[in-house]
Image (cartoon, rainbow, N blue to C red; front, side, top):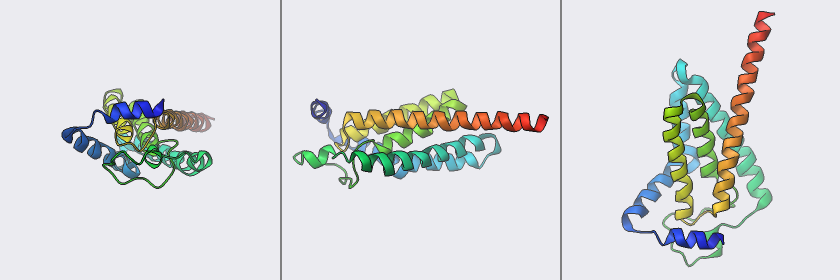
Length: 176
């Protein structure tokens, strides 16, 4: 069934969309766009917490998703299984589940959304585009992307609410 979804997505290929999807996916390479945004946010005192929590969330995602789960599940990528599909990007060497691009994108954009709903909606839309690009480019299955999305959101929520609890604890500690 997942291959059917990928083949349907593959039928959308055209010259313009191919270039757009390559560009979109490259924004997520090694979490590039999100790390850049996080660093920029840490430079201003007003947005520093948001930037730091983005970096923490993505770091935890790398450990849990990319290092632990990917190697535990060891799922082959669709481009490894069906080599007849012409790839527009270099075939990744690591395992497929969960999608690291998607996980980092949703971890970062969820943190942004928790701090600023308007900008957060924009970054969540970019996260969906990055996630879709991974299927469009035939390097992830739909369940890889869904798992990456859910894991990224869960990590971001855990980091954010843990930090908020720590902040409340610090305030109460100062009062006593």
